[in-house]
Every structure is written in structure tokens, then in C-alpha cells.
Length: 184
Length: 137
Image 1: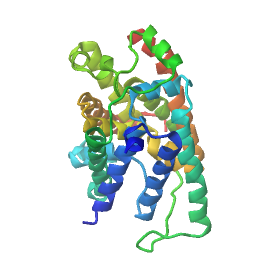
Image 2: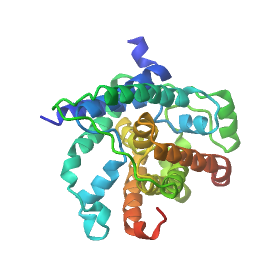
Image 3: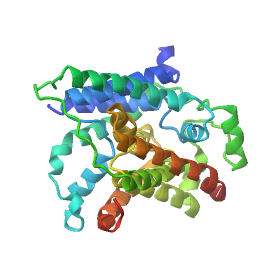
């Protein structure tokens, strides 16, 4: 039990993610989470305004069920499998974040971004909104997210996925080193 | 009942993402600052096993549970859409600390603020659909 309550090692987690991908392949599907965003747009009847949402979204029901499972998995983790201990990030990261006024972790997520005070402030709300907008826009533009490109695509040695992952890091580094210091 | 297996896989995914701390904004910051091996270890392990497994599936023409061949469809050839789209995705990933999967895992964990991020991710996808024809692909 002690082993379950502690954070899991990178290698075990990596094995489990690969296993999930292979199970999905064995069940006739493929691992790609951001497709759900497109499916939700289609289910919401947005096909009239953009034809990328004009497809039989019910064929993607399995992925929406996977999404519901992921929510349940987060809930189960908190209720039964977690001590809610601070995330043990490196000292160097703690130092860098403190320069932006973000305190050392005392939980899974920083209150400076996801706490009620932050959400109810204009800046805090815009951070969350623009973060989501760029993830949603970028994942569809690139044709996939971390699961679709970095895991499924790279496993199939697709050069397009490697370009997308390079893009993930170009954007991520720009945000981390140039934009975040301006915001926080 | 044919969906129960996907529900179970989703639950495992949610638990693994939480227990590996890959759903944490702090871990994503640590990754983009190259200050720990953790996230690279997770993705690297998954991809290493993935490459071997996919190669075996192709070599031995392994079929899925219904007996259909497992096919991998090559992605559309382009550089612009993957590089630009990927970069926009990366900007959002480093800001919100979550890609689409971890967003919903966080909601389940009780971080309701992630519902705002997820809602705007849907809006972002819709916005892409609206202006797709004006973008370089």
C-alpha cells in the first residue's frame, strides 16, 4: 500500500502508458486524446459553421468513454491512492519559479494558477483561458497532442510527429523563458 | 457493454497520469527547464516500448481482438502545420501545465479551475475549424 500511495516511478508510468496504447490498438482504436475536442464540437452541432466537425461523431464514442474514465481515474487517485504530498520537483525549478513569485509546491498544483483567488482575478482567468485556447487550437492544427504525436506517432516513427513534438518544445520553451516571466 | 474496456483503460490512464505527477503544472515547468529526468523518462520509456511493439505488430501482422489487421495510417505530409500547430500547442501546454488528457484528469482530482482550461480548449478547437482554410497547412 505504501508503494501505491507514493508517487510512481517514471519507468513504471512509462510502461503503463505504452500498455494503454497497445490495449487501444488491440481494441481496434488508437491513442489520441485531443480528438475528443473535435468530437465534442461535432456532438455540439458545430458542423454547420466548420466542415471539420462534419463527421459521424458517434464512431468516436469509445474515446469519450475513455475521457470519462480519465476523470474517474483522477477522482480515484485523490480519494484512495494519494497522500496529496507536495510534488517533489528539483531544487533548481523551485528556485526559478520563486523568482516569478510562485512558491515551492505544497500540493499537486500551484494555488497561484488554480486556486480560487487566481481563477477569480482577471489575470488568472485569462491565463487559464488562453492556455486552453492555444492547446485546443494547436492540437487540432497539428493533428494531435502529446498522446497522438509524442506517444502514438513517435512509436510508429512518423517524421510528421517528430516535427510536431519539436513544435511542442519550441512553443513550450518560448512560453517558459519569455512569456511566463512577463506574466508572473 | 462494449465500451466498458475503454472506461477501464481511461481509469488506468487517469490514475497513472496522477500517480506519475505528469498532470502537475510543476512537472511540466521542470520538463521545459530541463531540470529533471522525470517527464523525459516517462515519455522516453513509453516511446521506446512503443517503437518495439509497433514494429512487432507490423512484422508479425498482429490483428486486433476482432481479427482485423492493426493499421497505422501515415500522417498527411506537411511541415508547416506540424511546426506551427505544434508550437501553438506548446505555448498553451507550458502556460496551463496540461495537455488535453491531464486537463480532465485534473478535473476528476478536484481542480475545478481545469474545467475552464478544458472548456477553452474546446473553443480553441472550434476556432481552428472556423479559420482552417486561411491557415498554411
